[in-house]
Every structure is written in C-alpha cells, then in structure tokens.
Image 1: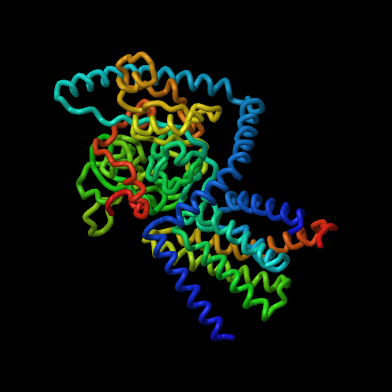
Image 2: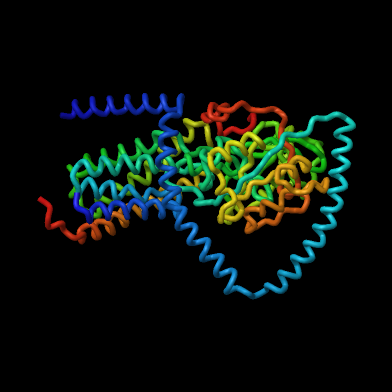
Length: 368
Length: 156
C-alpha cells in the first residue's frame, strides 16, 4: 500500500511539473483560467459593486449637504485659475505646432482612452501582486500591458485579461518598474514600487543629477508601454546612501489605490478605436459614465476625431470624456493632469500580438 | 444531487468569491472543498474543486499551478488526516487550517521566487494567520448550515 501511494505521488508530481513548465512556456492554461475564473469573478462582483456605488453616490448626493456651498465657491476659484492656465497652454500649444512644422518633426502618435470601472482590488488567495480588477477586457480592445490611468496620473498596466475583465498591476507593486523622467530637470531614472502603503523609489539617478523635491516624475516613453509625458509620482525626499553611486529618491504616487472607482485605459489611437468599434465597444459611453472614448493627445487631430471645433488648444479631451476617477484622493497638480496635459506617444509601433508574446515577461516593464 | 445542495453550493461559491474580494489572500472556498468531501458523493468535490481551481487561478496573479497544488495538498491532507482523526472533529479542522496557513506562506513564496518576483512578506504572514483562523470557523458554520438543508423526499 505505501509503495502504491509513493508511486501515485511521484506520478502526480511528474504530471504537475510537466503541466507547470508547459504552461510557463505557452501560457495556454493561464489563458483558460483567465477566460473562466476571471470572467466568473467579474460577473459575480460587478452587480454588487454597482449597487454599492449607486447607494454611496445617493447618500453623497442627497444626504450630505454639509459644506456644499463652500465647496462650490472653492471649485469656482479653481475653475477661474484653470481657465487662465488653459489660455496660456493654448498659446504654448499653437507655438509647439508652429515650431514642429518649422523643424519638420513628426508628431507623436495619437492615443485614445476608454473608461472602466474598478470591480475589485486584489482578489483571491493567489493574488500575490498589488492589482485591481476592472470590467473591460479583450472584447473592448484591451491588451496585455495596456496603460491604465486616472486624471491624477498613471495607475498601472494590464497584467492579464479575459473577454470582459482585466487585472491591472499597480505602479505601487514592488515588481513594477517604469522608466521616468523628472518633469522640470529632465533627469531620467527607473521608478520602482515598494509595495502597499509605501512610497515609490526612483532608481539609477547618478549623484549630482538635478532633481527637486516636489517635482513631478513623468513617463519617459522608453519602455514602449506608456505614452511619453504621463505623470506617475511626485518626489518627496532626496538623499544619498553611503558609497552608492546613485541618489536615493522617494516619490509618492498620485492616486490612492484603495479609493479608485473608475480608471481610463489608453489605446494607441486609430487601431484600438477601430477595434473597439468592431467589437461593439459602445458601452464605453454607456451609463457607466466615465467611459467615453476621447483622444487625449494631439490637439488638432483629437478635435478632428471628436468632431469638435479645434481652437488650436491642447485640451480637447475633457468635453466628450468626463475625467474618470474624479473621486481620486490626491488631486492632480495642474501641471500633472492627464486629460488636457496631452502626453505624447512613443513613435515605435509594436506589432499586434507582440504584447501577447511578451505576456510571460510582462511584469518587468523596464530593463532592470 | 439534491436541489437544496445545488443551491447551497452556488450560494457558497458566490459568497466565497465576494468574501475573497473583501479579504484578499484568504481562500474562503477551501472549507467548502473539505465539506464536499465529507458530505457529498466523490464526484461533487471533484467538480467543485475544478470550478474553484479556475476561479482562484483566474483571479490570482501567479502562473497556473498554485491552485492545483493548493487543492491537491488539501485533499491529500484530508485523506491522510481522516485516518488519524475523526473527520468531522473541530480539532482536525483547526489542524487542517494550520497546515493551510503554513502552506499559503510557503507556496506563494516558492511560486513568487519561481517567477522572479518579490512580495511583502509581512502581508503574506498576516494572510497565513488569517487563513489558519478563518478555515475552521468557516467550516463549522457551513457544516451547520449543510446539516440543516431540507431533504429531498423524491430522492432514491
């Protein structure tokens, strides 16, 4: 009897290791698990989440009137300030267009965005990484490594997906590495997460390289995943450690992971847009609210796309696409806003399907 | 299978999924797997285990295989354990919970290392403790509920 048990265990172990290594190489079983388990969880959790959001918004709208007047005054002040800034930015944008034509620089690639609801945070016993579950998947044109943002800044990128759901790896996860550049001083580095409830750290910044506290770190576009110029974090502390060649830079993420309710997915412009149309991704503009599709970059083309008059401004996006995740805890600094801020995409185009092939290594965004 | 049992397992699966979103890192379906092995025909835990395996693997962020090992070892522990202990004993369930808590810590660690990732160990430790404590309590609750399910009079 013990001999039979031992043989059975050995055969089981052999089969398990075979399945594990075969799946690591091909990813077939992972895909099957995503298309069944992830999809099931999405349809089980989404209705309850919707009820919760509706109940919360009802309470907020009708029961908590305290402070509405003061908040209204504050918002009017902010609106006035934003109008002034918008006017200045429009001037800058027209100048950029003129200079670009003058210097014959090809314009950055166009990106569009689509809203999605957060269905759940980490889910299940195997959720080892800091992730979110959202209600958009491959049927809406989402792919592995699709960037996920909120108005305040970058949230993360898609790690795995099913037809109607996707898991998003947050920038705060310790396996997330994003190439960034400081917005003012243009110092480059790699932004690495340090886990939940911790700040991020900017690595590989040489001693003496100029970085200031309070400076916004934006994506450099080098990893060919995120568009160039998206705000990711704000520098909170700069120091040095012993004999290290590099500075120690802490940075705070621009969003509160546990308070995210909606996010926006970024697609490489026309390709994703046409795919969405084919996939019947109209729900993007459904009652879910923030899901409207709208260009976020390239003012001139963006206006043409949405059919709006193009006032030569940098901010065509807000009209059709009410900024998702308005409830995000950290308000974006004006300079860091994603909507009007117009990030510009990297020029290199990744062929379709490349993302899927990169699935196995998808955790490592940037060279280590 | 009785209709009341079918309803029970459907509700259990949905509730478990919801609880897992509230308390990530803890398997709320594992006690049901043990209960199914104790109370139902052998085909029921096989089907339920397969469904739950894909739920756990699909919602998790690790490569496929963790859930297979998780439920496989749980079934093995139950089979070997019920030779030594009374299968419906709360102490046996507590020992199973302790084994699961330890296994959660070791298994996730091994899988994370195999995939060249890093995770916060403190959080993993906390999840393991929660798994240890929640497993026997949840098993006790669902065992009581399952005992009070209406009997199907038309059953053969």
